[in-house]
Image (cartoon, rainbow over all chains, first blue to last red; front, side, top):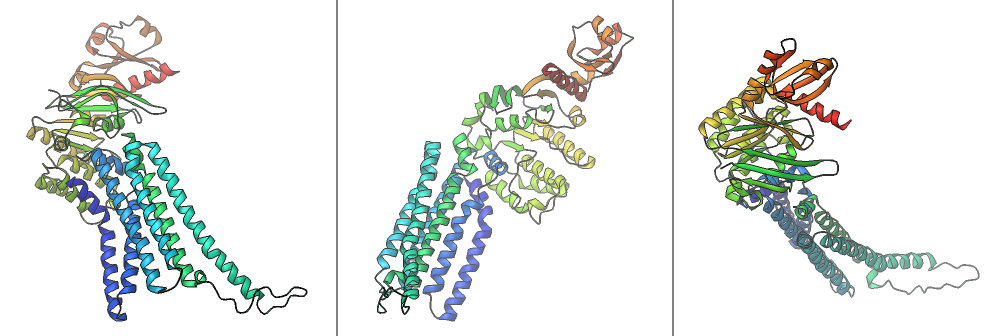
Amino acid sequence: MKGYLTYFFEQHKRMAAGYAVMVLITLIFAVSLKTTTVPVAVTILYISIFASLSPVASLNSDREIDELLSLPGGRKNLVNSQYLNTLFALAASVISAAVVTLLALAFTKGQSHLPSLMVVSLVISAAMIIIALMVPLSMVFGKKGLLIGFAATVFIGFQSVIRTLLTNGGAVLFKLLKDYTVGHQIEGISVVISDNLTMPDFMNPLSVLMTAGTAVTALVSSFIIARLVFSRKNFRVNKL
Amino acid sequence: MALLCMEHASVKYDRFNLDVSLTVEPGMITGLIGRNGSGKTTTFKAIVDVVRAGGKTEIFGKDNRRLTEDERSMIGIAYTDIFFSGEYKVSAIRRILKAAYKNFNAAEYDRLIKRFGIPQGGKIRNLSTGELAKLRFVSAMSHDAKLVILDEPTSGLDVVARDGILDELRNYMESHEDAAILLSSNITQDLEGLTDDVYMIDEGKIVLHENTDTITDDYGLVKCTEEQFAKLDKEYVKAVKTAPYGRDVLVSQKRYYLENYPALAVEDGTLDQCLIVLAGKNEEDKT
């Protein structure tokens, strides 16, 4: 285990150095802006997204996996590696979803669509936990676990996109329609939308951005975890 | 007790089946030779359970899948094409090996690194082919392993470096009397002067197992026409391969043929000849 942990550390230490630099930049921004909320939130988001990329970085080639298997820990190295990567991906996904929610709260204080955004983020976080658990499940149940993981990943990815499109795509269309029709008199047709019509809460551009951000985070996380589930390592663990 | 014992260790791929039986005794250097793709690397991977094999594979008298981490750390292995990611710094290898192997000998590692002039700065991917081969070798030889497995350790090396590797292997056996080395090489001259025992593998099967001295002292290659071959005593014939002039006949008692067939050309046995005739015979059998 000690050998594997050293291997893992050597593999990820550059990324850790990147995090340290980001934290430093955050401190500089926080001091110069005299506020900590935004820089800290952005940094946590950055770190969590890149931490979730670490499993991709460690999707070793067959040759490296062979080397890992040849070290004294043998097969345990591979299993430990998958569990550690799962832990990273899981933590990163949950943190990024939570940070998006916090950012939304910070920017859109007091607006009525907030619960909807929070629900989206929480659903995504929960889904990420389920998906991430597919890695150890696939190690225990083999191909069935992989299939379930894949199905869950696809489902979560698509539901995020569809939800974003339904919520915000509709809102954008509504706004375009309103901008086009108000003040225009089309021959034979009366104006259908009153000038007094106000934009619904969910059409707030910041809301659109936040929900889109959540969906992108979810998609990236889903992709990363899917890669993890379908990695060569996982197949090799099952094969052995 | 044999340090390594394989009995019908079998691996099945789409177009290749391995079925190997071999034994490595303590105090001996055992060679494994064969053509490219004959199954040497797969055999090595099967030994340390990197590739799961059927049949029986025992290391230190124990099933290779049941070895503890401490027992596995008594194996030193270097493959020809497998190593840590090229993104690792060369200096990181020392730290990983030190953490992974409880018997890691830092002084020996440093000595070998210095002897072979392996640069410690920079990344693995920036090493030359020769430097990488030497680093793999050093990694396998620096934790006082009881069983050392080397897949073509001299591949890609110049003659000076090759000599250095062979020299280190001899020294290792002198200082580790209970240890054993199993190695493969395409440069069979290296094995002739180094190994005690040789296995020849072709198409996943062991086609010859012999003491190295027996091959160099007793084996021979009889070159004869079809007519001469028809009259040849086949008692000591190991394999026959078609040649432009008739037949190349690998025999296990060259003196018998030198004495009884003075008209025939009988060359001294070499590992190369054994391999050419045995592998050539296999090719002919297929056609």
